[in-house]
Length: 267
Image (cartoon, rainbow, N blue to C red; front, side, top):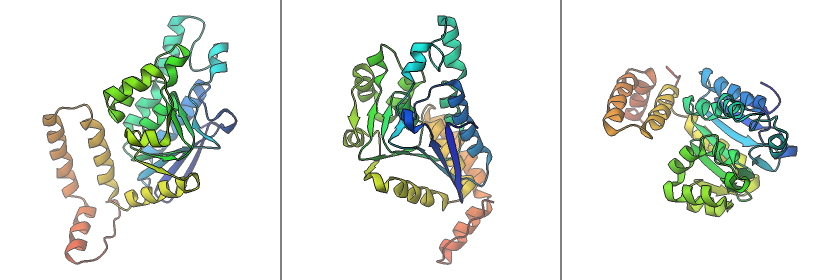
């Protein structure tokens, strides 16, 4: 990984911190995308990790794309020709949602400040979103004469519904943290100084559960967003058959019947 992302492990919890605070953690170059993709892959490959947190260094979560890079045609957006620009989107920023969607580890967005454009979409890629009371949100591409080139039109409506997503994308309006809470963009708003403690406490509650079942439950949730009921039922039956044979399931049943706290091993 490069210097756009800081990666930390605390027990079974991974913390990804976007690390360009002087630019409000805007994604400026293809290498920034690759850093983030590598961090997400690292989480998925580590069987000791059962939850993750995505946040930003400094005042911003992510201010989206780097406008200077767009003007200079040397960033994640336009290049010298429309065909090159299309390839540029495909190879870099569009690989970010694919990486997040492939991740089987639950991930919490701890949104500490501005989540604008691509930054808003990064938040939507996470399973759970907690916002600082100072956070701001916008699908603001239209304000620059652009559209969501990173998959935001697909992501946002799955989080807030079609009507609200259409309102956000077609107006580019900025939402404050309370407005984000009211429309379901985030599930909780806390004071800025409480944000990471709240996210860590939630992650700790997640990782207290059996590791293999957590990954299967996350995959089932992802699949259920797009699949029909029959497909989800078949997948549920297959996963449940695996879950019933795990040592952690047996331990959970024994602990319940014996009225004690279970000890899970990930087996």
